[in-house]
Amino acid sequence: MGEFSSFDRENIKENIKKTSLDVLVIGGGITGSGIALDAATRGLNVAVFEMQDFAAGTSSRSTKLVHGGLRYLQQFEIKLVAEVGKERAIVYENGPHVTTPEWMMLPFHKGGTFGPFTTNIGLRLYDFLAGVKRSERRTMLSPEQALKKEPLIKKDELKGAGYYVEYKTDDARLTIEVMKKAIEKGALALNYIKVTNMLYDDQGKLIGVQAEDQISKEKMEIHAKKIINAAGPWVDKLRDLDNSNKGKHLQLSKGVHLVFPQSVFPLQQAIYFDTPDGRMVFAIPREDKTYVGTTDTFYDGDIAHTTMTTEDRDYILKAINYMFPTVNLTADDMESSWSGVRPLISEEGKKPGEISRKDEIFISDSGLISMAGGKLTGYRKMAEQAIDTVVKQLKDESGILYQDSETMHLPISGGEVGGSKGFISFKEQKIQEGAKLGIEEATAAHLVQKYGSNIDAIYAYYQEKQKEADTEGIDPVVFAQLLYGLEHELVYKPVDFFVRRAGALFFHIQWVRDHKEAVIAYMAKALKYSDAQLKEYTEELDTLLYEATHPVD
Image (cartoon, rainbow, N blue to C red; front, side):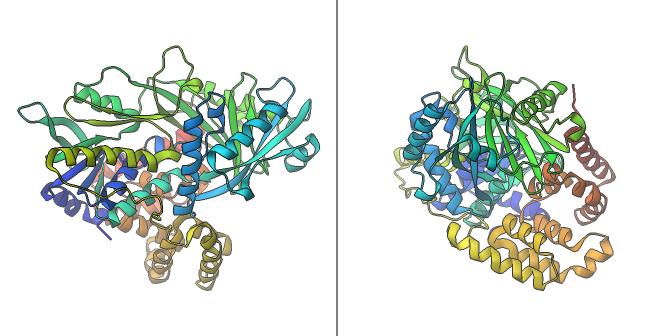
């Protein structure tokens, strides 16, 4: 496997500088990670620069569903539904540890957006277009059956429900596992490297970038035959650098999700429901939490730092209490939250929820290839299209032939478990192995689900580093995950570990509070933080902890 350790940052940087790059990808979210993997598997020399941490933007702040886009049927986006529905199954088979089938119930009430007839037709069409396997095809439920599955939903004027399968995921883990597989296949990637300018030849063609290491402040020039802008919400910022931000552009939409303990919102069944203002919202049980979202409002603020407002919070609370009238939730019941932006391709006169989620490729006169729009579910297909574009250009320019994409049946890192069926027995076996090491069954199950076939590395750290963990005052399971993150997942800052590699800020916020002091102290020592870095990185995590539980107006 290639280098992906924070202790090797300088080596990785030097390798990028001295490699003759075919492709430089700007952006380390799910799209950039997918592009890196597709490029590397075709034999292209590819590097990725991410100005924050991998998945720090939209790719860690989605609804955490690899879903087939049922609601796009309402907008008659038949092709989109067919494509992402099929991609959903591919994502699941290639990474069953980070993607899990989840039966979703769509209740319909008198006067609501959906009715029994239209829901039945829509779900049947959805099954057909998305190629849904027989065991996961939709069924229709009577009001009594719907209430039995979820007693909390509104009983008044309930006419029944549709019942179909979606797939829930850990979006940030999915992103890092795709990137790790790209590294394994020969890609090079670094977080905290910001592209500051573009480099051109005498004919005005793009030949490279100027970049700055956000940690060391080192400036560098990197050349590449092709440059792909996969910066998500920042796509237009890079097009501005290239003086090519013309014609179609992005319209950003903010989405907020709230998290509640099951003790106050004991949801037992994932629900997709319509709100009083005609929008659709998800309520999903996850571990011992229930999360609900999302809002959908135009956004023109700081892309790197979106926050929940009082209005966002109260909108979701109102939606919850409308569909689940007996829970009577208040702001005090909320345990955590997250906020992010969707990079949509602008369509004049449309509300955020009405704008298409389809993706497009923009190619500027200088040659910058920009990936705009798109969905988490369709990341692999977007990557294939991007590298198809690159290899066609390379063939036309130099006659070099590259093979077709081979990612359709390629497990991502952690996904080498024999597909979705193989993962069931794999997980049982690894939970038992964890129990023999002294790890509680529930904890082992959580770890196997998070790390998949990489679990052996976690177990090895757990076994071999018990004494050091004790010396550092860190729980040995936490220490094993931290060491794995530092040495195999390019964790550099505390937020990288707590927010994106562990996913704990959103679903286990008390876990972050409990372990942050000891973890930060160890990271400061291991990575040789300066006093200024230690202060900055601690404050960064503390700010996110505060904003997860408090509106910022």
